[in-house]
Image (cartoon, rainbow over the protein chains, first blue to last red):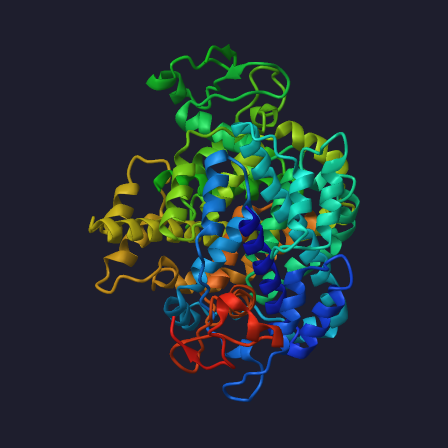
Length: 309
Length: 309
């Protein structure tokens, strides 16, 4: 799970860097400066720190420019992110930011296909470079806030998965202690782990990191910047799957009433899976059409009365 | 995989319905009318058809309003979507739209947590109901195009997974025939399966459905509407994970050069995983900092020269 979170951290940084390079037209040095600045605040972390160093590294082979621009954009992996996604799926825990990071690595590997597709899927509607450049400092500040909020989502997902495994196997894992351990020596070490440690140290451990006192107010304060950032990416045609998966996680988790009610109706319509109601207990079949009266596999269908499942 | 695509189809419809109900303030009858209209065109499909019927079904229990609004928004599942995601992960095929649909079902199950979170994660920045209503017809047309384009992405992903399994196990599956089979009797039957059948029937089978002659021009024509739709959702704070995962898939797949180059640099920086270059063959280590000269596990590090892996 540590490595799954690491994949997400790296992908989120890659997306932010991509926006800076390809929409805001920033140089590697300018992007490195922005990362240095972020590393003094709440984004302070090992990965932010080394990203700045990487972006400043000249290309020793050609002597021209920075090495990052010569590096092949096919990402390898050792399998640990894959294992995290497999565990999330097996345990029924949603870890969409981590899954998006794994998918980004998979798709990066299809270099030849992507080169071919770039000639075919030509999107004249995207790219608002000039427009975005005009509001450049605002866009950079927004990116930092979007990065932080999305990072919190990926930690929330990873810790939810650890908690689920701990509950299932009786491991009795202390998430606060887990956050403390990650503060030293490992690749995802970051200032926000102090707050995660504190969030789970309280007597009433939050059901999810997002709603903890340490993070909820900060996330609520960042939503405008987060939404603007994703709006800019999608307008510009720059993929930001991990940023998007994070805000979708946030917006789903904080929703009292989801359109899942329609999904349940569809499942009852075509498969007789029954529905529950919000105003009374029990399982119900609905006679959606006259044809449903005579459907064999759901012949307990009534006009909406309670049924035994 | 059929069922994984079905999960995606249903989730995409749910997201579109959610926008219509909660941002465009449309009644169930108005939404059903829009679905009926869509069912006459390229979105023609069984799931669109039954959604309209569902939205018109009165609540027989109370006699007031439509039953959909009384249905509990906790989605069940029989496990088939989960199996699809597990296969995608195992085979290293990105199926993010299908995975987003599975995650949406998982998160819908956390009803009590969501109710609690809705009181805490209060996002004053979201909801632009009035603004969106002013451009209502445009927004509805855009939703239809976004739904279609996203649906094509989920089919592209599912078919890529089938192809990968077919290659691995020597099944020699004809994707055109697969599409033909799905045209009859099953839940995902849809008009666009004719075009999928045709796309893979050609002598030169496309590497991915997205770039086929049958779909690329149509997708390219829909990107503006697709981007506007996601912009509206993210601004309004309405989660649209499957729509987002689809456009991120599209925007990643059509990208010749990805920020994966930075990810590879990070992996070489902290783990000595080496990088490839775009200008010459071979694997390279970079001496990112002076400290890298003396890192034990990557003691083949040079000043960027070729190494043996």
